[in-house]
Image 1 (cartoon, one colour):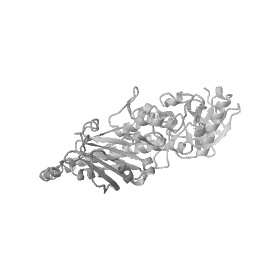
Image 2: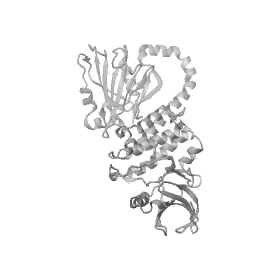
Image 3: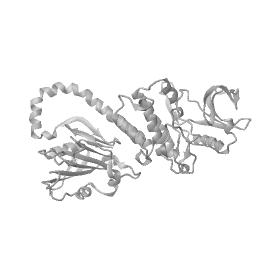
Image 4: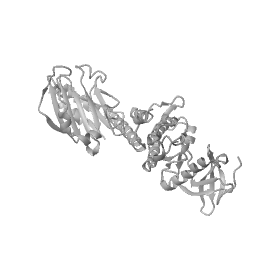
Length: 447
């Protein structure tokens, strides 16, 4: 390939990269003393009207977006031979592909990068655009002003389309390893969830300890692994709905891990106090041993529900079966119990189901929801209310049940901040008091 000396008013300094459809050169504007990236349509595609239109559409999309998180376009021109070229801002920090080729990215840095990438893709989604080809080579870095951190920018929108046109009638394209399954189906719909799949793949690549097969490194929080698992679900309906939802779930997962780390650091500091107060602690626990709490938390797969676990309990669950959101995904939920897999089938095993639903919040009230959940063959105590962790709970206790759990507690409340209706069905440990139920409700944190 012979490098051109000049492209329009720009002196060509060197080659930045080549692709299937275009070549990118580093150009210099002598009058402004500025460098730019110049993308030139490949000669073998210059007479294909479809490819030429796609190239020009990228220029229009970038010009319309004009955002710091997306590569900016300055102008669109044409070479003497008729090939169009696109003048863009130069990302002087190279690409994510370059950095991954240089070696592993630390886990903390990888998580920050992934959040920044999701924010950039979120700009596209907010403007009704799906990228369809998110790869490490299309994630670039640009230096910030003096003293400022570099910025992640999204590039190469050559395959992007307005969402209204991203249907089975559009051309199927993408990069193997980052393409969602539906991109291989000529009759499927490509939408923001297609980019979510690619974000999950980018996360796996950033945090992997091996390239083939991709396996996450030690130190990647389990909550983050759950987010990546949801993002790369084979069915689009099982993924996060867009980049913003993915980014929010990732942020919650990182925050949950940070909280756990803080608690872990605090435990040695209070060990002496716990030993000195052992006699008092034993007396207190004797009053309601089942109410003892451990410092562990459990979260559902979306990170929207976090529960402080009673001692010896653990969490499990993939969502609220039978209760789905507007996008067809199961609402968040989890089971907590000493034996989550047995708490429904074994009457002697205590446990609780906690679910969160925005759709229920729009159609019912906590009192009505609890009233609908009566239990035949049980004696029902008067319904009570209790305020725990900022939520006003409606609580109904069903006791002396002839079959199944001897005691079942139904509770519901309206979470703050529009998170939805939060529901808890609790089978408390034998011999526990209402204080156990209130303590469990107080440990529920929803977003």
